[in-house]
Amino acid sequence: MAKIEFSANPTHLPKHPHPQTSPPPPSNRDETRNSVDYISELPIGIILHIFSFLTSKDAIKTSVLSKQWRYIWTANPRISFSMPPCYNRRMLRSFTAIVDVVLLRCTAVKVKSFHFDATRLFYNSWLRFAVGPTFHRWLRFAVKHDIEEVSMFLDHDIYTLPKFFFRCTTMVSFHVSHCHFSMMGAVNWSSLKRLRIDHAKLEDNAITRLLKGCPVLEFFELKGCWGYEHIKIESRGLRELVIDSHKYDFVHGQILKISAPHLLKLRILGDCERGEFKIDKVSSFVEVELNFKMDYYVSGQLQAQSQGDLVRRLIQSLHHVTKLVMGNLCLQVLSFMEARGVFLPSLECRHLVLRVAENHEGAPGIVKILESSPHLEKLFLQMACRPTFMVNNC
Image (cartoon, rainbow, N blue to C red):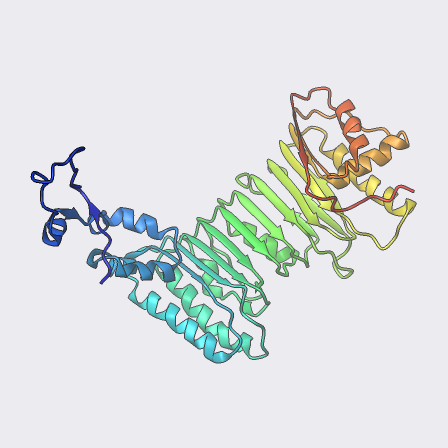
C-alpha cells in the first residue's frame, strides 16, 4: 500500500560539524517512528470536500493513499462520471457496470449532486434502446437519495426523461442537453431554482407546464432549443431568462414572443437565425443583454433594414433598463442608423457594456448609443477576439 508521509521532526545538522562529534545518521526505524501520516489524519469532512472536486472514478483511486481513505469514497455525496468514447455495446456495458457498482456501494443517505457526461458516446441505431433502462435506473437512484443538483449531457437525442423524474421535489438545479421531454406529464419540481435546457424540442405548452411546476425558479435558460414561439412567465420569483441560439423553423413561425411582467434580467445571445423577437410587458426589466447574430437569406439593403428595424424596436421597448449590454451586431446596426440619420430614443441606462469587434466594425454605433444615454455613469468596452458577424449596409 502506498503511503505519503511528511517528517514532523527533521534532523538539523550543526553549521560546522566536527568529525569526532558529528551525530550518527538516524536509522530508518527512527524516521518511521518520528514521521506523521497527515493524509490519514485528515478529518472525513475535509476528505469529502476534496472529493467534491474529483470525478467518482478519481475519488476511488484515492483509496490507495491510506487505510483511512480506502472506503471513504462510498460516502461521497457528489457523484460524477464522464463516459469515455464508446463505439460498441461491449464498451458501453463495461462503463455502465462501473457506474452501477459505484451507485450500489454508495452509503450517502442524501446525494448532493449527480453529474453525467456522455457527449463522447458514438451514435448507433441500437443506442436508443440500450441506454434508456440504464439512465432510468441512475435517475431513480438520484431521486431516491434526495438529489439536489443534476446535470446530464448527451450528444444525441436518444433519451426521453421519465415521468417519475418530473416529481423530484428535492432538486434545486437541473442542467440537461439533448433529451426529450415528451413524457413530461405533471411537473412537481417544488425546490428547483435553476433550470438550463440545451438542444431540445419544447413546445409552448411544455414550457408552460415546466414553469408552473417550478414555483421557486429563479433562473431559466434555453440554449439551441426549438419548437416554441411564446414564452409566458407569470412567476414573480423568476429573475433571469436567457435565450441562447434560438432555432426558428417555418412550422412554428419566425417571431419569438416573450411576455414576462416580473422578470428582472433578460439575455438574448448566440446565433438566432432568420427570426425576430417581440418583447411585451417589460417594465420590470433592470438588465438586458442583446448579444446575438441574425442570419437572413437576403442580402444588401433589405437585410440591413430588417436588422435595423429589429434592433430599433428592441431598444425602444427596453429604453428604461438601468444596465444594457450590446453585442457587435447591435453596434453595427446603430452605425447603419447613424449613417442614415435614423432617430434613437433617449435611454435611461446608467451602466453600459459594449462588446466591440476586433476590426472596430460598428465603432460609429458607439457614438450613437452614447449620444442617447444622458444618464450614463459606467461604460465598459470589451474587445472581441474576432469579428463574428457583419451588417451589409450597401
